[in-house]
Image (cartoon, rainbow, N blue to C red):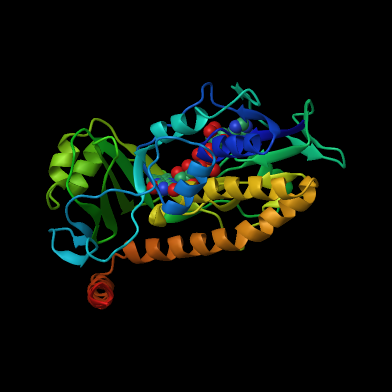
Length: 360
Ligand SMILES: Cc1cc2nc3c(=O)[nH]c(=O)nc-3n(C[C@H](O)[C@H](O)[C@H](O)COP(=O)(O)OP(=O)(O)OC[C@H]3O[C@@H](n4cnc5c(N)ncnc54)[C@H](O)[C@@H]3O)c2cc1C
């Protein structure tokens, strides 16, 4: 049986393990954390990634997202800039990260072994295979070791690595349901609301600040506690918050494969979360990896095809996500006025087009 090592057991790594297992590989997952699992709050899984998960046999993730009540883009006092409910937009499945991770790892069969508390420090390769930390051998290595990937650093020592976006993100789960959802844009800060499939409400918020400044639930309440309903109530029903400074990787992205080593997920293409697609792209990477490995007995050729397919897609997403972040985090009042006007006018055009589509 062909053997693969997957470095990192985040959503990208565990999906890669299931994908490799599905095409006949024996997989060892190496994770530096002492236990398997995900922290974090909610996550949006868009239809392309849902399809991959369904194809891999991951259960419990419905094809269509659900939303009740009004949704779209609002201003801090609650007036609508763009309402999305009747525009026929695709909806993601909103799920807690820990639940998603559990649903994926539930598909691990006997071909997948996991070593937690194992930190990868070195990787090398020759014509016959890969070598990790000078002792573990396999035919192939998938590096899903995240934003600050050690493997990417080893393969591409000249690459600049993560760059700070200028804003931080807070995330939390409110133990109450909310109707509707979407984002509210204020000056240099945004607040998002999404209904989780388990009935609770996921919220996130962004704010411009220097990297490393930190912040907690009290900071969030101070900043957004007087925004429109149901934001104050959601915050009052939240027990804790996560805070992460937002980074992405500089363009051009490095090749996603060299020889028998592939980069996947944030290790390859960490993007700002403005499109809610980083993990989805990692899941789709895993699906593509399995497809190319199934198509040829030559893993080096398969990885080259994987890079050719995935890098252009990820590059566009990194770029678009960064642009949305820049517009969403504007702090100049004149620029914000113009932005909101353009969005409002754009919403009118889209509404008109949707109405025409419905008439036909
Ligand atoms: C605020 C925020 C909101 C987001 N919202 C969404 C969303 O709604 N939808 C979406 O699709 N994406 C979203 N994302 C992006 C998403 O979180 C990431 O793209 C995704 O989690 C990346 O998964 P990964 O497995 O590639 O990397 P990671 O989740 O970073 O996993 C890497 C794993 O590798 C391990 N590791 C690292 N180094 C080593 C080593 N040397 N040896 C062994 N193990 C190692 C780590 O411990 C970790 O478990 C969001 C991101 C942020 C910050």
